[in-house]
Amino acid sequence: MKVKGRMMLLATLIAAVALSVLSYKGIGAEKALSVNRIEQGLDLSGGVDIVYEADQESVTDAEMKAAISLLQGRLDWNGWTEAEVAREGDKRIRVQIPGVENAEEAIQQIGQTAQLFFVDEEGNVLLTGDMVEDAYKQVGATDANGPSQPYVALEFNEEGKQLFAEATQNNIGKAIYIVMDDEVISAPVVQTAITDGHAMITGQFGGEEAEQLASLIRAGSLPFNLNVIQMKNVGARLGADALSTGIKAGIIGITLVLIYMLFSYKILGFAADWALIIYIGLELVALSLFHVTLTLPGIAGIVLSVGMAVDANIVIFERIKEELVMGKSLRAAVKNGFQRATSAIVDGNVTTLIAAAVLFFLGSGTVKGFATTLMIGIIISMFTALVVTRVIVKGMMYAGVNNPKYYGLRLK
Image (tube, rainbow, N blue to C red; front, top):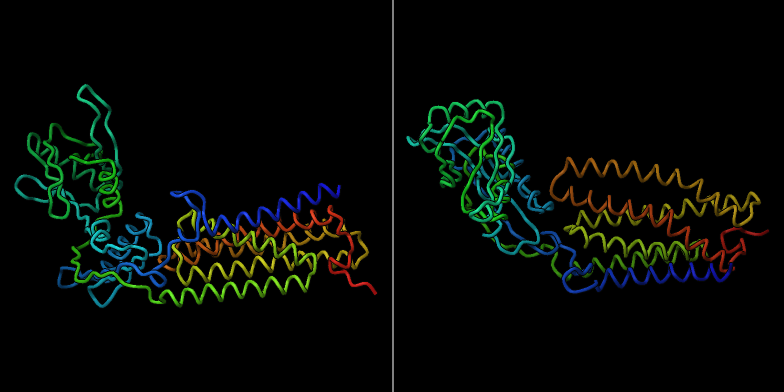
């Protein structure tokens, strides 16, 4: 039994070291899970700053809110969940995108107005982009002429369906121009009336181009044109020195926590320390794996989850001590201590997880970044506290460390 316990303990400690090395150095060249691959936000690593201005004289609050919402949706669609979109003055919108080096490339991806119009040969607007309910990339069946080109399929809402049916009925044998951002992207000739509310945009699209066009249309049509009046690449507000100082402060703080747990809870503190090391390794791997953009609010979420991980271990250890004081054997005390603490830990973490989920789905920009790191941290902290710590404690028991005083029992 002691041999088995030593093997369990050794395997767990090796896993902790391996995760730490993995999270720092990564594995492989292209798919490394490395600290160096964790994306940093605008306040840590810089990025792109773009200022847009509406091209019409008067703009209502509702129109500005719609424009901000649509721009944020495009940013999220491109994976820039840490980007910030904020109104400035009456007609301007500022967009800040961390981790992006080329401002012009960012504008090409999210800066288009995506104003879509269906126009007849006389230049009359038949439908507008806000009548499009959905847009997605499709690829036609391969025929004798080779593989078909990708195209963008459109679905109209009820108003658009009715207007498109009328437009096709009145323009049989004529072209209906599909215009986006003042550029004709397709000019199909109407062969028959289309009454099912579906249309397609064809052209010399590649798969990626068709998907990008569909995403722009799906994000919606802005209520007005936006002109770029300023774009620049910005440096980190904190700078490399401040970031380095922050990392050092984090290391010092975690070290003090490890020392406190070790001296306050002895063997149990040793188990908690290894569980916390594994927690840190898993956290870094998760940040790299899920491409989470790290900002100051995101770091705050990590720090909060670290505190929750330590707190969960303290709850477990206090329950074990209570069981030992009641005269239970060490094995029974450990078993009952984890069982009694589980419900309290799960309840506390789940309620926090729900709050973080609400912030994630209703928030945007750095608020969403804080919620992301907090949710990841909560899930990992529950795993390390309820599973990893238990494995380490049982491993030490099976290895022969069975004196109750090492587990917090004060003998009279």
